Image (cartoon, chains in turn cyan, yellow):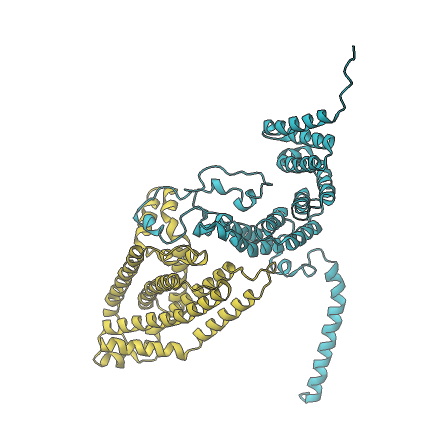
Amino acid sequence: MNSPRTILLLLVALLVSCFGLAAHLQPQFEAWRGSRASGDIFNVVLGDSRRMFAQSFYVKADAYYHSGYYPTMFDDNAAFQTAHMAEDTGAVNSKNHGDEHGFLGPTRDWIDAFGRHFFPDRHTHLDEGGADDDLGGSDNVREILPWLKLSADLDPDNVQTYTVTAFWLRIRMHRVAEAEAVLHEGLRNCPDSYDILFELGRLYDESYHDTDRARNVWNLAIRKWLKLDPDSQKDNRLIFEQITTHLAKLEEDAGNLPDALNWYQAAQKVSAVPEALQAHIDAVQKKLRALIPVAPAKLY
Amino acid sequence: MKNIFAVAGIVIKELYRRKDFYVLFIVTILICLVMASVNIFNDAKIVRYLKEICLLLIWICSLVIAVTTTARQIPAERENRTLLPLLAKPLTRPQLLFGKFLGCWLACGLALLCFYVFFGALAATREHQWPLLDYFQAATLHWFMLGIVVAMVLLGSLVFAAPSSNNTICFVIIVGILFVGRHLDQVALTLREPLRTVVYSIYFVIPHLELFDVRDLVIHNWPLIPWLYFSLALLYALGYMAVFLAGACLVFRRKAVN
């Protein structure tokens, strides 16, 4: 019984049984809805909790945007409800209020007063020079990118991660190709995102000066936005205003004044400050009137 | 002092004979190199995430080295039955304790030196600068914080029965202080009496180890800490080391050594 041959045969038998069992179970496991094996490594390791980590890394990126000066859960974070790095892209509804410079408040005791010399205690933004206040170093905003990339890997459905990443890649680091790749990846994961389409249109318009592609992409973004239910449309008016304003400007520059007027008027309907757009509407109307041929004056 | 340095020398030799430090150092290097090899949008200048990971690993490794090395000193002497012969020589109990403390603290300092040299080299490969004074401040504050930890664990090794329980309790206390120590007064405000007074008292009694954590200043290239406050922080650390060592001496004076 204990001969090497018997042991070897037993091992082979076990191996064959294991292989057979695995081959039998594999199709069932693949078909099982609870299986994580089909996802990426984060999905396998973290499951749905990866979204929580993704949010943490997104906040981490914003903390880097402030060079470490960031409220903890114990501080007053009313001025940090919306990430400033997203707010500065100009395409995000801000929920911030309160004092972003002094969330620490007055010193509470000598330990608190003493401790403030040992961590960042001044509100700065990386794109405005960061801790050095050196505007020449505004490309240091690159430092937020690893956390945004990680956040996007962990939660591919978070639209804002793509738009923020692409905006800073394009504006401050002048890496247009990488920004475009990020947005296309975002579109693959979130095909109905009008935010990503808006940012993609800006990239085509401002970086590639390809107005036709920008127009097409923004028109598609408008169509996606119009498919939203009325409540969602109400919550996302800022992005609609941004898209229509950009479209209006594009048409105005292209000389398509009636289209420009239509887009400005559409933007005015949802704008929080419609008066600001009235000046543009007046200017376009003035240009339109100048184009209409004047009737010949009466000879008699 | 000669006796104290002799005991300290033995502790330092023990550190470099054991493999703990080498393992932790190599793991830190490997993780950092792997993280450095990640391509982020084809930009080779991105460095702060790397500095953050490296400093985090340095903090974890240094705390592990400090706590585990210190926690086993006195229990190991007792277990090996070398404590009694050691004290039979012209070596007083406080001298033995100070020697053990000094040895562990210096050993941590040597380990930190290796870690921070690696950190500086890693950061310099991307940043092309070497802010030596910033690193000096960060490493010195870190080392003094470890001094408090070593003194606290030494006291714990005389109070708690086994090194494992001492390790666990000390780690929980240290991590707790590092995470919520700064905010305990805010937490106290949300509580009712008498719990409020208890939490407030804890806030003022505990050593605020988080003061010595200046990683954010180093990672984000903030200006130097004013030297006055830097010196005051070192004095603060020395004060707590003295308190814990005095406590350890008092406990050890009445402790049976056989």
